[in-house]
Length: 222
Image 1: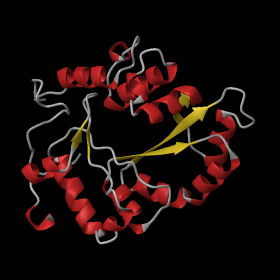
Image 2: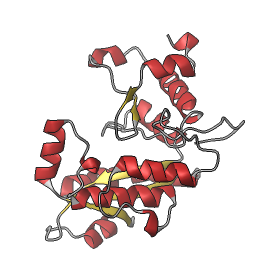
Image 3: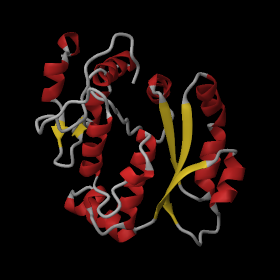
C-alpha cells in the first residue's frame, strides 16, 4: 500500500504501548521484508518524521546498504556497544563510515550497554581503542532484562531498577532537558514522555496522543 500511504493508513500499522510509545514493528515473517526497497523504507521514515518529534530506528547489527541509507537519513546515530574485543573490532572496522557521517553533519555517539565496573576492558580502554568518548553507560542487570523480555514489560517501567533510571537519564540528555527533569524515583519512560510534551513548543496535549506529535513544518528535518 505504499502508493497510497498517508498518516491515516500508517496509523493502522502502528502498535501503541501503554508507556506512551508507538511502534512500527518488523514483519511477522522476515521474508515479507525482502520486497521493500531502500527508497520505500526512507519514504516511511520521512512520513513518520512529520508526525513525531522523535523517531528511533532499531537497526540490525549488519551494515547493509539499507542500514547505511537509514543512517545517512538520520540526524543522530547511536552506537550501542559492550566492553569486549569483538565489539571494539566491529566499531574499528566501521570508523570510516562513522567519520563520513560526522563530516556530513550527523552526530555519532557511543553508548555502552551492560556495563560492568570490574570489566577487563574499562570505559577508558574502549574510548582509546575506538577514538570516541562514551556518551552514556547502561549498567548490566541481567535479572531485570530477563524479566522484562519474558514478561513483555519494558524495563523503563520497572520502578525499582537502577538501569531503568539510567535509561531515563539517557533519554533526558538526548532530549536536551535539564538534570532536574530526570525521573529519579521511577525512571518511567511514559512519565518522561509526559515531561517532554510540556517542554516541546506546540506539542499536542491530551490523552489521545500517546506519542509526542507536532504540526508539520515545511522543509523541517527530524
